[in-house]
Every structure is written in structure tokens, then in C-alpha cells.
Amino acid sequence: MVAAICRGVALALLLFGSARAQQADELLAAIARHDAAAVSAALRAGAQPSLPEASPAVLAVVDALAAIPASGDRGPARATLWAFVGAMRAAGHRPEAPAGQGGSLASRLAAVEGERSLFLRVAAALPAEARCALLGQVLAAGEGPAREAAEAMLPLIGRAEAGSSACGAAFAHAVAPALAMAMLDAGMVPAPEALPDLIRRAPEGDEALFGRLLALDLAAPPRPALDQLGQDVLEDREPRSASLASGDRWRRIVETTRDLPLCAALPGQVVRGWLSIPPDAQPWLGLLRETTAALLRRCPAAAFEPALGVAAGDGLWHRLAGLGEDESFRAFLAAGLRPAGPDALAASLACDARPGALSALLDLGGEENPGALMPAFVTCLGGLEASRPGEAETLRLLLGRGASPDAPVEGDAPVAIAAQMDREDIVAMLAERGARPSRLSPERAFHWRHRRLAAMVGEEGPGPGSVPPRLLRLGRGLLAWHLVAGCALPNCDQFLILREGPRYRLILRSAGHDLRLENANWQGVRNVRVTARTGAASHLEASWRYEGDAYRPWRCQEVEEGEAAPARRSDVACVSP
Image (cartoon, rainbow, N blue to C red; front, side):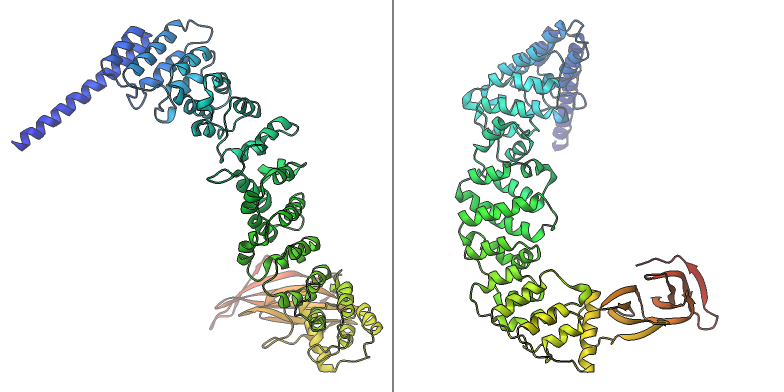
């Protein structure tokens, strides 16, 4: 008996499905004939506007109208569509309800050239609360007749509905500036997620639109427009927000925003912006600088502290000093913010020769003794070839604040270290402040030379396991130091550094486990061979020759080693580092 019931239900469903398919076919046929009476009758009989799924009748009725040229007789097709709308509404269906990917009847009609009056008639027949949703659909349909239809339907939206979230969401569809102004005039308020793009796209010179947008609540949840714009301008430096970077628009946004939302949204973005901005990122750097100054005037120090805590190792302070942003460095200090490790930061600033930031930090009168910073400065002192703009001023600052010119650095006198570095300018400054003449022992001179050569190639000075540099005679009167550094076994970075007067110059940079001079020479200077391990049983041999100012590879061979058979050599292309 159960089986019989199941068969009966299945048969009933089959017959029902067949009946619905027949109704859909009849409705589509009536639409194709432009038979308004038959369309109404089919819908009253239960035909579904959303069927068949492949070509729903609700869209087919619009397509039938659009297929007739604008110059042709569209009267019967219009009457059919209007009858369709009336019948579907009477049956409880909504003309603004989306039908799959093709939109709704109303939004599809809006895109038909020459049918604005019929579209407005359909829109006016909708419940008032449904018109904002239709406006969003029409704007999403694209440019051309649809945009014109959207502007034309604005008078149909009452003030009560204009402030709804549906109308606010309609601004998200890349609304043109003129239409945005018309929507604002109609009493609509952009949703918070749509407001940033409206502000970005407000044309230069259109102060009326920009002013209207600026008067809106940039702090409205869920994600305030101010937060989105701040991330674009201060952190990500998005090209889409370039309009805010030119002129005074970003400054006006900051100035007109209330303190509470301003200080909730932007301090963290300012900190993250400083940590990521390149040194040549204009005009973003200027905006970041101005925004920093404004926030430090208007916001409590606590607003910045969460972001400063995330920037481990006093990253913000190091970054500001590295960019030469001494004014912003001082402003953060003046606002009551402090580095987590002031002593370590002061030593780092002395090492990096950042006198402006160092002076600001020392002005706080912390525990760091300026005299204790002398070793940090001298240890990082480069040779004449690596002198930095802030070194003389940094030394003058330390000496002026009581540092002894004779404070030992790793047991050596600063004046002797400076002389080893060929820094006669530093020697003269130390002597002027009373430094006693001093010389390094041969061992200590070698130590500081090693440190100087290593600094030239971005390496730390001599340490445990480091290979001492060796002096190679390359040719008559031509000597160079061979430096090995940066080892990642089995290969290491290999450098040749030539002394020219009081300066050193890098003439070869390669990588391998062995560097040796060859018997062959080029124009009186011996060639160099660098061997690099490339596999368990293979290596690369690169021959370099001196070509006037530096060594360049001229012949390279891949060598496959064999235990019994002779090694196999094959020429390969040389790649300069």
C-alpha cells in the first residue's frame, strides 16, 4: 500500500510539473504574439513569471519589447508588458524581484532605449518602500539609458524612503558625480561603505559635491569612511585616492572630523604608514607628515600606544630617524610618547649618525650618558669612502654634551681609529676638543681595517669564525684585499677591494668556496678564478679579468667530477653579479 501511495505522489508531481511547463509555454507564446489579454489570462491561471528557468517570462516580455526598433510600432508590446505587470502584481509577484542573473523586469526595462516613460510608469506602480531597491538595480545595470532612467525616477522616492539603507546602498554602484549630487538633493544618504568612493571620485573643482560629502558622518559604522580613506592615504598610498593627495582635500577631511572619531581611526594608520612608506613617496610623505602633526595636537598619547606596541623594537622611532623626519620625531616626544628602550635607541642613533633625532632624545634627560654613546658612534664610523652626512654633527653633539674625546672604544682611542679609517675630518674634530695623539698596534690596525672592509660590503666586522682578509698582488703596483664573508656553506661571498689613495673601492664581487689568482693576465693584471660548488659532484669555474676599473667574468665552465673518468667540462654563459 505504501508503494502505491508513493507511485501516486510521483505521478501527481509529474502531472503538476507538466502542467506548469505547459503554462509557461503558453505564456511565452502570448508574449511573442504581443497578446496582452492572453498574457493576463495565463498569469491569472497560475503561470509563473520566473519560468522557464532558461528564459524566464518576466525577462522575455522586456526582451520582446526591446527587439522592436525604437522607430517601429512598439504599442502592442508596451500594452503586453503593462498587462504583464498588472497581472503579476495581482498574483502576488513583484516586478522589481530579481530573476536570476538577468535582473528584474523593472531594471531590465530601464535599460531599453526609448522606454523611460513606461519604466517610470512601472516604477510608480511599485510600493514606495520598494523603489530604493529598484534604484540600486537600475544603477547596477550600467551606463546609458539605465543611468538616465535612474535619475528620472528620483522624484518618485519620497523623503521618508530616501533615508533608508536601500537608498544608501544605491550609491555603491559607481554613481557619476552629477547623479550623486541629484541623489543627495533627493535626501539620500550614502551607506558608509559607499562614501569613500564618492569622495575619491568627486571631480577637482566640484566643491559643491565635495562639500556635501564632507558634511556627512564619516564616522558612521560598521566601517567608517574615515577609516577606509585613512588606510588608502596613510598606509597603502592607493592610486585611487590620488585625488585626495593633491590640493587640500585630505587636510580638510582631517580638519572637519570630530576629535573622537578622528583619534579612534587614524593614529594607528599614521604609525603603520610611517613604518611602510618609502623615502621618495611624494606627495604621500607630506600628507603623512601633516596628518601626524594634526593628530598629535588633537589626540591623547594613548591613542597611539596600541600601534606603537605592535611596532616591536621601537620601530617607529628608528623609521622616523632613518627618513630624516626629525620634526615628527620631536613632535611624538613632545606629545608624551616615549620609546620602549631609550638607551638602546640613543646608541643606535649615534651609530647611524642621526644627530637631529639623537638631540631630541637626549633633550629628555634620560639615563643615557652622552659620553657612553661615543663608542657606538666610533664603532660605526666608516672609511672615507663611506662617510655619511650626519657624522660631523653627531660627533659635535656628543662632544658638546660632555663626551670625552678619549673615551676608549674596544680599548682603542677614537682618534687612532679615525686615523685608521682615513677620516682626517674626525681626527681634527677630536684633536680640537683635546684628544691625545695615539696609534693602533699592528693587530688592532688590522682589526679595524677588517671592520672597514666588511662594512663596505654590508657585513659585520670581524667576529668568531670570520676569515681574516688577505692582501693579493694583482700586478705591478696593484694590490687588493681579498675578503670572504656571508658564508652559506659550501660557498661564501668573495670580494676584492682595491685601495686608491685614502679610499677603498670594490672591484670584484662573486660567490664560491675558493678564489685564486691565475697565471694568465689581461693587460698586465692577473686573472682571477672563482670556484663555486653547484652540486655533490659538480662545480662552476669562473675566470675573471680586470677591464680598466673592475673585474668581469669572461669564461665560465660547469665541471662534472667523476671518480674513474676524467672530469667533463662544458662552457656556460657567465652571469655578472
